[in-house]
Length: 305
Image (cartoon, rainbow, N blue to C red; front, side, top):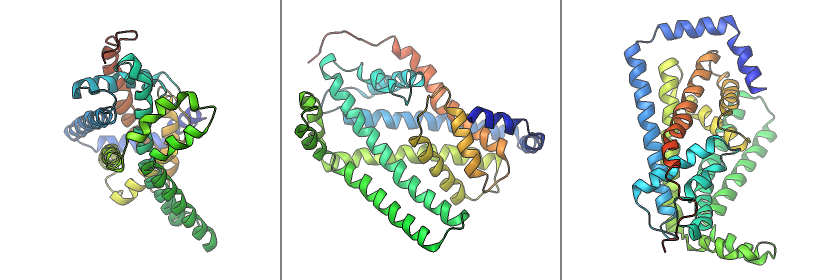
């Protein structure tokens, strides 16, 4: 459906004419500079993720910053070919000692929850703004949605900052009791640790929001900063909730972005171009770079305890 939607948009002559006129009006030098900045931000984004990963596994195994970078890029290579990026876990934890790999999966899960909390809280608030701004609903519906969003945000925040409690719940479930020793790592993350991880997540969120803004501002400078950011937050929110495969993800991203940005601009092809560019720079280029690190994986190496 996503690719059919894109095909329909790209075959709309008026859309292509508008986009061609837009591109011709932008100086080449400006385009090159913007692309360069977006690529630099990509490296900064994944460097932040590497620092977050290094911090998360410090209670399991001490790794260098460079080893953290290698494992993150290797994970990105695996993620591209697996549904919902599940291979990213394997790509990273194989850089740890064999007996600590399962603990690494749990630690990475804590980081993923932190990123999900940021995306869900900011995205749900942005979606509420979108409904209030563009959809004419009854007052009581808007009020009910406000209450729902507040409860939603509070739930995720409380869950994340009390993730240690999850270990106690798991210990009480007989079906998960055999794996209790792996989940024990959850009890080691104190509130201060979770706040530091949360700030890493916020920083990453700011970086890839900036990538979208820079590219959209290049093509559609008339759009206000606030509306670009709010639509981008919604895009991240919807994107995180949908099952995906990175290699095919560009279709779903483009369809979602075109729908929401369609409320503030008629330049559908420009929005799709931005979405495809961010997808390529943030996922495909790192996956290609990470292919070299896959060769360094030590699947059955000694456990360096």
